Length: 246
Image (cartoon, rainbow, N blue to C red; front, side, top):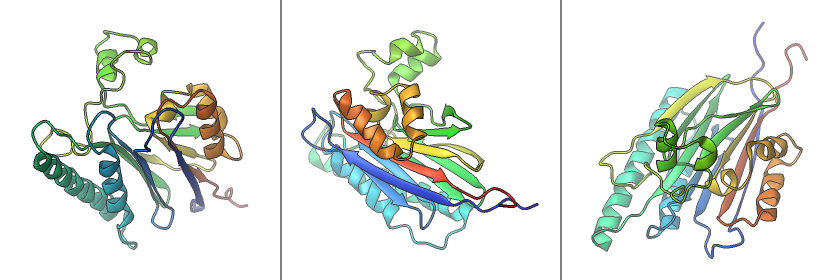
Protein backbone atom coordinates (compact mmCIF):
# COMPACT_ATOMS: atom_id res chain seq x y z
CA UNK A 1 0.00 0.00 0.00
CA UNK A 2 1.31 3.42 -0.92
CA UNK A 3 2.37 5.71 1.87
CA UNK A 4 0.40 8.97 2.10
CA UNK A 5 2.25 12.08 0.96
CA UNK A 6 3.64 14.26 3.73
CA UNK A 7 1.63 17.24 4.90
CA UNK A 8 4.37 19.53 6.15
CA UNK A 9 3.39 22.43 8.37
CA UNK A 10 6.04 24.94 9.37
CA UNK A 11 6.45 27.94 11.64
CA UNK A 12 9.40 30.13 12.54
CA UNK A 13 10.40 33.04 14.74
CA UNK A 14 13.54 34.96 15.64
CA UNK A 15 14.43 37.21 18.58
CA UNK A 16 17.44 39.40 19.28
CA UNK A 17 17.70 37.93 22.79
CA UNK A 18 18.35 39.84 25.98
CA UNK A 19 22.04 40.76 25.56
CA UNK A 20 22.87 41.46 21.91
CA UNK A 21 21.94 44.76 20.26
CA UNK A 22 21.42 43.38 16.76
CA UNK A 23 19.84 40.19 15.46
CA UNK A 24 22.26 38.49 13.05
CA UNK A 25 20.01 35.44 12.58
CA UNK A 26 17.86 34.94 9.50
CA UNK A 27 15.47 32.16 8.46
CA UNK A 28 13.78 30.92 5.29
CA UNK A 29 10.33 29.32 5.57
CA UNK A 30 9.20 27.99 2.19
CA UNK A 31 6.73 25.13 2.52
CA UNK A 32 5.71 25.90 -1.09
CA UNK A 33 8.90 24.25 -2.33
CA UNK A 34 9.81 22.13 0.69
CA UNK A 35 12.76 24.29 1.76
CA UNK A 36 13.60 25.69 5.18
CA UNK A 37 16.81 27.25 6.51
CA UNK A 38 18.39 29.10 9.43
CA UNK A 39 21.49 31.26 9.08
CA UNK A 40 23.45 32.77 11.96
CA UNK A 41 25.88 35.58 11.19
CA UNK A 42 29.24 34.55 12.64
CA UNK A 43 29.75 36.33 15.96
CA UNK A 44 32.76 38.56 16.24
CA UNK A 45 33.11 39.07 12.50
CA UNK A 46 32.22 42.11 10.45
CA UNK A 47 28.65 42.34 9.17
CA UNK A 48 27.49 38.88 10.16
CA UNK A 49 23.95 40.06 9.67
CA UNK A 50 24.76 40.94 6.05
CA UNK A 51 26.13 37.44 5.46
CA UNK A 52 23.04 35.79 6.94
CA UNK A 53 20.75 38.07 4.95
CA UNK A 54 22.54 37.23 1.70
CA UNK A 55 22.07 33.53 2.40
CA UNK A 56 18.38 34.02 3.12
CA UNK A 57 17.85 36.05 -0.05
CA UNK A 58 19.67 33.49 -2.19
CA UNK A 59 17.51 30.63 -0.90
CA UNK A 60 14.32 32.66 -0.97
CA UNK A 61 14.84 33.30 -4.70
CA UNK A 62 14.97 29.62 -5.70
CA UNK A 63 12.12 29.09 -8.17
CA UNK A 64 9.41 26.45 -7.71
CA UNK A 65 9.08 23.43 -9.95
CA UNK A 66 12.47 21.79 -9.34
CA UNK A 67 12.67 18.06 -8.66
CA UNK A 68 14.45 16.80 -5.57
CA UNK A 69 17.87 16.35 -7.18
CA UNK A 70 17.68 19.72 -8.92
CA UNK A 71 16.64 21.42 -5.68
CA UNK A 72 19.65 20.08 -3.79
CA UNK A 73 21.94 21.11 -6.63
CA UNK A 74 20.39 24.59 -6.71
CA UNK A 75 20.82 25.05 -2.96
CA UNK A 76 24.48 24.03 -3.21
CA UNK A 77 25.02 26.34 -6.20
CA UNK A 78 23.42 29.37 -4.59
CA UNK A 79 25.26 28.89 -1.31
CA UNK A 80 28.55 28.54 -3.18
CA UNK A 81 27.81 31.76 -5.06
CA UNK A 82 27.05 33.50 -1.76
CA UNK A 83 30.25 32.10 -0.26
CA UNK A 84 32.32 33.63 -3.06
CA UNK A 85 30.43 36.94 -2.95
CA UNK A 86 31.04 37.25 0.78
CA UNK A 87 34.75 36.48 0.40
CA UNK A 88 35.03 39.15 -2.29
CA UNK A 89 33.12 41.69 -0.20
CA UNK A 90 35.32 41.00 2.81
CA UNK A 91 38.50 41.33 0.74
CA UNK A 92 37.28 44.69 -0.55
CA UNK A 93 36.89 45.93 3.03
CA UNK A 94 40.51 45.26 3.84
CA UNK A 95 42.91 42.61 5.19
CA UNK A 96 41.71 40.41 8.00
CA UNK A 97 38.02 41.16 7.42
CA UNK A 98 35.57 38.25 7.37
CA UNK A 99 31.87 38.28 6.48
CA UNK A 100 30.47 34.86 7.28
CA UNK A 101 27.45 32.94 8.50
CA UNK A 102 26.52 29.43 9.48
CA UNK A 103 23.65 27.79 7.62
CA UNK A 104 21.45 24.73 8.06
CA UNK A 105 18.98 23.77 5.33
CA UNK A 106 16.17 21.22 5.38
CA UNK A 107 14.65 19.94 2.13
CA UNK A 108 11.64 17.63 1.98
CA UNK A 109 10.06 16.05 -1.07
CA UNK A 110 7.56 13.20 -1.26
CA UNK A 111 8.67 10.69 1.40
CA UNK A 112 12.28 11.77 2.00
CA UNK A 113 14.26 14.64 3.47
CA UNK A 114 17.78 16.00 3.10
CA UNK A 115 19.72 18.29 5.40
CA UNK A 116 22.76 20.37 4.41
CA UNK A 117 24.80 22.55 6.70
CA UNK A 118 28.00 24.44 7.50
CA UNK A 119 28.78 25.64 11.02
CA UNK A 120 26.99 25.04 14.30
CA UNK A 121 23.40 25.95 13.54
CA UNK A 122 21.59 22.67 14.09
CA UNK A 123 18.82 20.41 12.83
CA UNK A 124 17.00 18.06 15.19
CA UNK A 125 14.39 15.38 14.55
CA UNK A 126 11.84 14.37 17.16
CA UNK A 127 10.49 10.92 16.25
CA UNK A 128 8.57 8.58 18.54
CA UNK A 129 9.36 10.88 21.48
CA UNK A 130 13.12 10.51 20.90
CA UNK A 131 15.22 13.55 19.95
CA UNK A 132 17.99 13.06 17.38
CA UNK A 133 20.52 15.73 16.45
CA UNK A 134 20.76 15.35 12.67
CA UNK A 135 23.66 17.72 12.15
CA UNK A 136 27.15 17.59 13.64
CA UNK A 137 28.68 20.92 14.60
CA UNK A 138 31.58 22.27 12.58
CA UNK A 139 33.26 23.77 15.62
CA UNK A 140 36.51 23.68 17.54
CA UNK A 141 34.94 22.06 20.59
CA UNK A 142 33.34 19.33 18.44
CA UNK A 143 36.79 18.54 17.06
CA UNK A 144 38.09 18.30 20.62
CA UNK A 145 35.22 15.98 21.57
CA UNK A 146 35.85 13.81 18.49
CA UNK A 147 39.54 13.59 19.40
CA UNK A 148 38.68 12.55 22.96
CA UNK A 149 40.37 15.63 24.40
CA UNK A 150 37.25 16.87 26.21
CA UNK A 151 33.86 15.39 27.04
CA UNK A 152 30.60 16.45 25.39
CA UNK A 153 29.53 17.91 28.73
CA UNK A 154 32.71 19.99 29.02
CA UNK A 155 32.25 21.24 25.46
CA UNK A 156 29.06 23.03 26.44
CA UNK A 157 30.95 25.37 28.77
CA UNK A 158 34.30 25.51 26.98
CA UNK A 159 35.74 29.05 26.65
CA UNK A 160 36.16 28.51 22.89
CA UNK A 161 32.68 27.08 22.33
CA UNK A 162 31.84 29.91 19.94
CA UNK A 163 34.62 29.14 17.44
CA UNK A 164 33.26 27.54 14.27
CA UNK A 165 35.44 25.75 11.72
CA UNK A 166 33.20 26.03 8.68
CA UNK A 167 30.86 28.76 7.42
CA UNK A 168 29.54 30.45 4.31
CA UNK A 169 32.04 33.22 3.56
CA UNK A 170 34.85 31.75 5.67
CA UNK A 171 38.49 31.28 4.64
CA UNK A 172 38.07 28.16 2.50
CA UNK A 173 38.35 28.69 -1.26
CA UNK A 174 35.11 26.75 -1.79
CA UNK A 175 32.20 25.94 0.49
CA UNK A 176 32.05 22.43 1.94
CA UNK A 177 28.53 21.44 3.00
CA UNK A 178 27.78 18.23 4.88
CA UNK A 179 24.61 16.34 3.97
CA UNK A 180 22.41 13.68 5.55
CA UNK A 181 19.27 12.14 4.07
CA UNK A 182 16.47 9.98 5.41
CA UNK A 183 12.88 8.83 5.07
CA UNK A 184 10.01 10.92 6.37
CA UNK A 185 7.66 9.26 8.84
CA UNK A 186 4.26 10.36 10.01
CA UNK A 187 4.54 12.46 13.14
CA UNK A 188 8.14 13.58 12.50
CA UNK A 189 8.98 16.97 13.96
CA UNK A 190 12.06 18.81 12.72
CA UNK A 191 13.74 21.79 14.33
CA UNK A 192 16.25 24.11 12.71
CA UNK A 193 17.83 26.54 15.14
CA UNK A 194 20.71 28.90 15.76
CA UNK A 195 23.10 28.19 18.61
CA UNK A 196 21.24 30.71 20.73
CA UNK A 197 18.74 27.88 21.21
CA UNK A 198 21.03 24.84 21.28
CA UNK A 199 23.57 26.37 23.70
CA UNK A 200 20.90 27.69 26.03
CA UNK A 201 18.48 24.77 26.28
CA UNK A 202 19.13 21.11 27.08
CA UNK A 203 18.09 18.30 24.74
CA UNK A 204 15.30 17.46 27.17
CA UNK A 205 13.98 21.03 27.07
CA UNK A 206 14.21 21.12 23.29
CA UNK A 207 12.34 17.81 22.98
CA UNK A 208 9.60 18.93 25.35
CA UNK A 209 9.08 22.19 23.49
CA UNK A 210 9.19 20.54 20.07
CA UNK A 211 6.52 18.05 21.16
CA UNK A 212 4.08 20.79 22.18
CA UNK A 213 1.32 22.54 20.28
CA UNK A 214 3.35 25.75 19.78
CA UNK A 215 6.98 24.53 19.52
CA UNK A 216 8.53 27.70 18.15
CA UNK A 217 6.91 29.98 20.72
CA UNK A 218 7.77 27.56 23.52
CA UNK A 219 11.42 27.35 22.46
CA UNK A 220 11.84 31.12 22.31
CA UNK A 221 10.08 31.57 25.64
CA UNK A 222 12.32 28.96 27.27
CA UNK A 223 15.49 30.57 25.90
CA UNK A 224 14.35 34.02 27.01
CA UNK A 225 13.61 32.67 30.47
CA UNK A 226 17.24 31.49 30.58
CA UNK A 227 18.54 34.96 29.80
CA UNK A 228 18.97 34.55 26.01
CA UNK A 229 22.61 35.71 25.84
CA UNK A 230 22.61 35.33 22.03
CA UNK A 231 20.15 35.81 19.18
CA UNK A 232 17.58 33.01 19.16
CA UNK A 233 15.90 31.54 16.08
CA UNK A 234 13.73 28.44 15.82
CA UNK A 235 12.02 26.94 12.79
CA UNK A 236 9.79 23.88 13.21
CA UNK A 237 8.60 21.59 10.41
CA UNK A 238 5.93 19.05 11.34
CA UNK A 239 4.91 16.07 9.20
CA UNK A 240 1.19 15.73 9.74
CA UNK A 241 0.48 13.17 7.00
CA UNK A 242 -2.65 11.12 7.68
CA UNK A 243 -2.20 7.46 8.63
CA UNK A 244 -2.35 4.85 5.89
CA UNK A 245 -5.96 4.01 5.26
CA UNK A 246 -7.12 7.02 7.34
